[in-house]
Length: 261
Image (tube, rainbow, N blue to C red):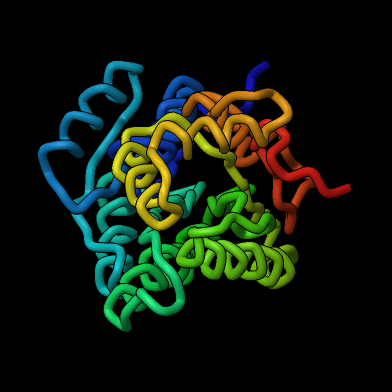
């Protein structure tokens, strides 16, 4: 299926690895030019080179998306190097495992700025450019902890729930401009970041990382973790021309982890 993405320009936050890179890869395979972001240059340059091999324009912008200035710098860099943007994917995020008693103010500030406010600020600065595009798309990336209780995931539950609400509000605000805003809710995915994350969660729970990973797999209907490309493929559809009448929606790609009706 031709998704109608060829020649479009997409800016993806937190995209030098993991789910962000998988989304960028899915878009590049469809002929979409991509602007990637990361805090480190070396990993970013490697990701840009890999995506350029798909015959599209791929650029990298070093930015700290934990700050409003960093979000603006990423948008300005993406627009400047690509010549405009049609698609924004707010993906950057991370987890700091802990409890209400153990988490301090600095940790809370970091996780809320990266996981929630980065999406708010990046969208804010991208909107003037998206409004110039035809059939612009915004896709926010949250996670299952925004909808399903997961002990030890306090620092993602709160911002993920916020992203879901933010997506709905922005969909209402931007519908008249023919800009769709959706949210993708990935399940537990085999990415590099889950190595130390599983270790940290195991420490909170008093168990082992392998037990944490297997316990999560057992809670899905498919009995396994997702592969990154499985998230990227769904994301590509959500920001494509083929998705013309879905907005304000959270799409769960979680292998059946969320079991409510």
